[in-house]
Structure formats: C-alpha cells, structure tokens
Amino acid sequence: METTQLQICIGCGSCKENCPQGIIIKGTPFKIQEEHCLDCGTCYEKCVHDAIEHNY
Ligand code: SF4
Ligand code: SF4
Image 1 (spheres, protein in one colour):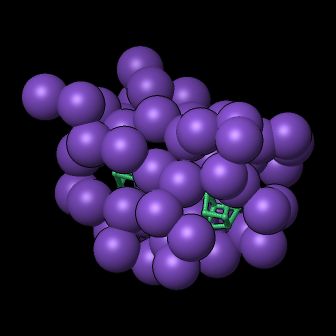
Image 2 (cartoon, rainbow, N blue to C red):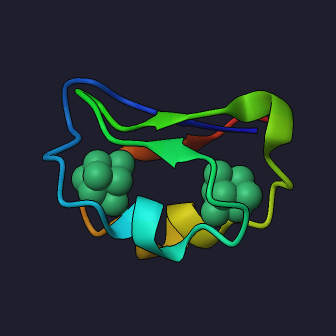
C-alpha cells in the first residue's frame, strides 16, 4: 500500500489528480484511502517530492 508523509507533502495535488481510483483526499498531508488502493504505484511515480512511500 501507499502512504503519504506529513513532513514532506507540500499539498500540490498531483497524486490526487492522477489516481485512477479517485481515492486520494485533499488534506495535510493528502490522505490515501488505503482500503481501496490498487497498489498501481501511479501516485508514487507522480509525487515529485518523494512524499509517498511504498509499504509492502
Ligand atoms: S503528489 Fe506528493 S506532495 Fe503532492 S499532494 Fe500528493 S503526496 Fe503531497
Ligand atoms: S497506488 Fe494507485 S490506486 Fe493506490 S492511491 Fe496511488 S494512484 Fe491511487
């Protein structure tokens, strides 16, 4: 699953715009509804601030 890190997320919204599931919610930090995540990795790839972590 993917998780966002509070210390690093700048709230740019790139992850939310690119999530095919539409499960990322605006906030501080942006929050992934992990129970609906497909682990596609798109948000991870689109976050240019390395604020999203893969946790397998
Ligand atoms: S793409 Fe990264 S920095 Fe931008 S809102 Fe998402 S987690 Fe935060
Ligand atoms: S891994 Fe894919 S489905 Fe899961 S939150 Fe990121 S973009 Fe959305």
